[in-house]
Image (cartoon, rainbow over all chains, first blue to last red; front, side, top):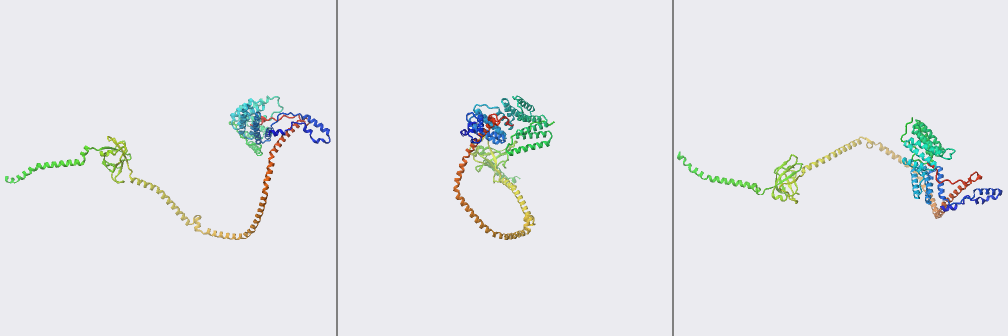
Length: 314
Length: 318
């Protein structure tokens, strides 16, 4: 497979390709020649490194594209194939990266148990090659455990990811997971601390981004909505949940969007607005069914469980 | 007066002269009778050869009719008698029996003593002891347990009671079944129920007769239709002939099928290679497009770096 890829690969940015173009023997040879010289001068001189593993790169690229186009099941299949190719290559870095991608795709396909297995398989393969794990693996394992209802273990892995991650995005996502776990435990203080840590992480980014990260905004609004519900402010929880749903809609995160819609319906019930709750729940169900009908999502293992102890609305 | 008394003198003298002999004979006779009775009662025999004493422990169910003086039988012959039957205050019962000394050799620890009736269901009760072969008894205080043989009359009575208990419900069921059958027959005779109406009322029979008549009419109407069946059969023969012809054509074409299948296999065998080439071409096309986008003349700013293999963390959605 690798040999075939190597044979089909032309030299990167070869200047000879445009020069052999036969169409330039026509009317304006001088202009064409000048253009070719200009093009050749700009894109020529490609570096000749070691041959790339085309099969692995193609599988990874296909998995990524499938995930972007909302086909998580196909994405998981492609990443599964890529993981096998990475094992064949005996490349620890590729194994770690593709194992993480496979777990993310399985999570998106609504298979947290499969995601957990992918993480454990990746950890075993890395340990065999004396390569330590990384914070993103802890993060995806925490999310899988959270969706399986094993919140204690999820909190431990999320805490480790938050402490060891170099990427602020990973730290912020880990803080979000810890906030969700705290919500399901009914611990309003821990949810507030998670929100504070997300803010601190965002504030520590240098150089400061011109526009706030919409993903962070959506996570922050979700945690704030859950905190408001825990603290007995269901009306505010409804508003924040709808705000989070709007951001997720713009980010094409439809599964997270309908999750927030249903949470907003739950909060509206708490606020004593059954009509609004019924409408929101109907919206969420319609979206979910449409996603399942188009194959862009699978039923999630755990969507919107109510907190164990929610104070009555004031 | 003296003369008158003289004639009596010899008679008186004669009488006095034999008195002593008569008394002596009487005493001797009495002694003979006395000793004869003693010998006849076996007192002397028992005095010199006394009987053995056997204690028979009776079951709690009762004496079984055993009384003082009851016989003790061993090997079908008389071996002694029950001398005394005792009832203790604690409820236990036992009998003391005398058995002949000769019988002592046959009565051992494993002998079985059973209280039976002389004539099966009636007669005097006696103790039947079997011959033992085990260790001899300690005749200073010999004890044997006794069982009372169940009276066959009691067993027969119990069996009869059991038969009666089982027979009476069966008889009751039979009576009930007979009563039910009687009710059914009565209802049938009175024309109740579907079967009764069938027996009493002949309307249904008449309707059946009418139906048969209608069926005959329908069958008569079917006759013209059946006349068309023959042409249909002829047409089907023609169709079958055509099918036979088509099958023959197919048979002639069948030898070419392997060639066609072989060609199809060759064509499909090239598909994986074709797909690989298509994938490679797509990859190259993507690279070419990325390079073109980076051309300064098209507004780009150099070749963009390849996308990282690892997905960004924001793709992890809890």
